[in-house]
Image 1 (cartoon, rainbow, N blue to C red):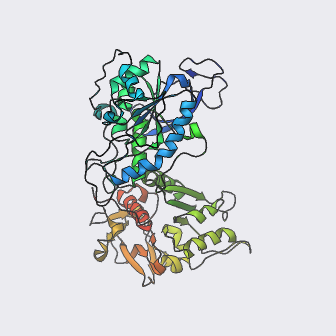
Image 2: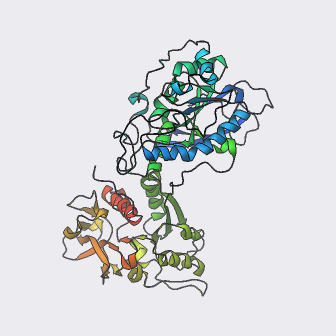
Image 3: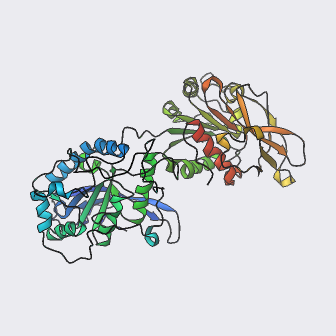
Length: 521
């Protein structure tokens, strides 16, 4: 837990940090941290609180915002966020916050600057700070980082040659007379102690490396008892998205921020100083998956949101769930979200949405956007409309999924006749089957009859009833009209407990979005 005192939303009393007088112009900082749901649990919950603190007891440390990095992508991202960062430090400085510029290994450039001499001349404070010691990852406290940065983390292709090209801090960040310049942990600590500063906000690069490990950065400052916050929207990682855990560069940054929120300190955003929305890199475009759920038999109203949270959200995908109304079996309130979806995921059985709602679905498909359907999606809109305000789509299975649903067999697990799922040998190398074992798996779901596969369909998995001869396609892709469609007749509640099925769905989502699929671990 951070040493900040917190003001919970809705409380009338203020808990102040730094001993500021009542009525002073306190910083209002909306913090986010993650706490274990139980002492021995590996599950965390997000905790958001409002912190009020005295700006005269607060410093911002700007970590390694160099003029040039050996990685071209890193250099470009620093340049992109620097203007927003300069706005933050200008506003923070106006409000009385100390600004410490810490571009490591460039102190020679600033040797004659008064701001550099100010750090060197601060009275020595009693502390165990070793100015040159890197604060390495603490396996006992934090475990491993959630990303593999062992290759240096350059996300460019081809990767850039490593080196030390930095000579100064990027010039966009203005250095004013009242600021401090230092890359030594002992000097920074001396200044903090001299001025009675208790609260430290850290921004800059790179979160998985310098922002954690420098002698003036998070691990050090937390260890010295300072109240530490990371400004999470003004930071970056050195992460190659082609390495574990195979997510986008920006999702990799999110994972490291989450790691810090769990093990080191809370985070804030630049919106606390500037208002508006937090900073976002222009290339940080997160695909949106809209789940359309409306079936009473297979509990996908529970299993799909859980799948989205555990398998997709942490990978940087924005997931929106649209559930059919409990009061009206044909009303999908919020379905207009499909209008901005990059992928539509359907788990619906015999519903007739309002015509305006159905139009969003048709427009999505007409635009060539991808769709995934599971289980009853083969007869999602095959029904009778209750009135002329509603729409059906009785041939959705043939026209979109690429095959005709003709009911199901009566095999049941209780009768000892599960569905045996097998990989078609000719499809074994399809990316959607990555990570599935060659011998296949068993499902407790009854086997669907799916016939008249379109020429544009590529079958991936077949199913048969134990002890029977019948074989039916149970998973395929349809690439008609250049659109990426995946369907599987699996999807019962027990299927979601199978690692093979969850991996199949994950692969299908990534394939549909043209995203890299993680290799076999």
